[in-house]
Image (cartoon, rainbow, N blue to C red; front, side, top):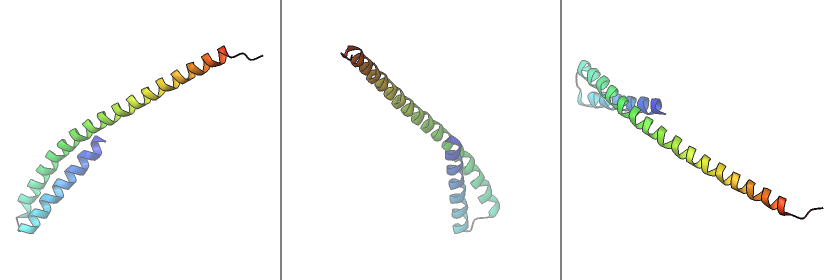
Length: 89
C-alpha cells in the first residue's frame, strides 16, 4: 500500500508543478528540477502515509479476525456442552 501512495502522491506533485510551470511560462530547466524535487518529497510523504495506513488496516483486520475466532470457539464450546448434557438414547 505504501508504494502506491508514494507513487500517486509523487506523480501528482510532479504533474502539478509541471502544469504550474507551463501556465506561468517558466523555463523548462527550472520547472523540471522543481518537479523532480516535489516528486521526491511527496513520494516520501506518500510512502509514510501508506505505511501508516497499512499498519492500521492490518491491525483492524487482525482484531476483527481474533474476535470472530473467539466468538466461534465460545459457540462451539456451548454447543458441545449442550450435546453432552442432552438425554439422547
